[in-house]
Length: 198
Image 1 (cartoon, one colour):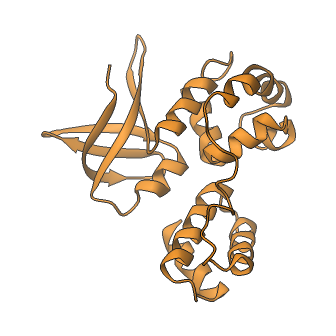
Image 2 (image 1 turned 180 degrees about the vertical axis):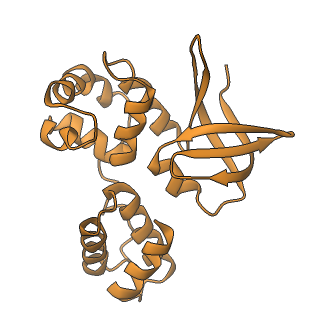
């Protein structure tokens, strides 16, 4: 069983990362959350889930153990395979997903491509109790962004980028990292920089 793969990031698309480790290039399926977490890095460490099927060995990679834990929980729900779980984790950050499940927000879960109302409700019913045991806190979004970040500019930039069609989770991360690096950036500067990152 592969626990993680650590090596040089040689190729990266929003859906796939190629990590070279001792001369072998591993093609690893990634979510948008992981894509934005490892973008621009040369060396990466991805926590792996290995799906072994009759016709293929598929690797799914995650930037954090929490994201992998949520992926493993999602694929225990009947009707949710690896690709659907990855789609859910691309649309929502681990914290957002925990919030959605613990608050029973099936409407938001249903907005994920390929998830109907029944599947959304099934995910919530089956995972509500299990989510509590993952220890993934709900408060990572705005509150963990240090007090030095201007929340007004942060919220305006995120709202603008979401209106442009970018997913919530990577947008939050990109804007937060820009404002951490340059707390005095204007909304326009933040949006311009975020467009290059997303």
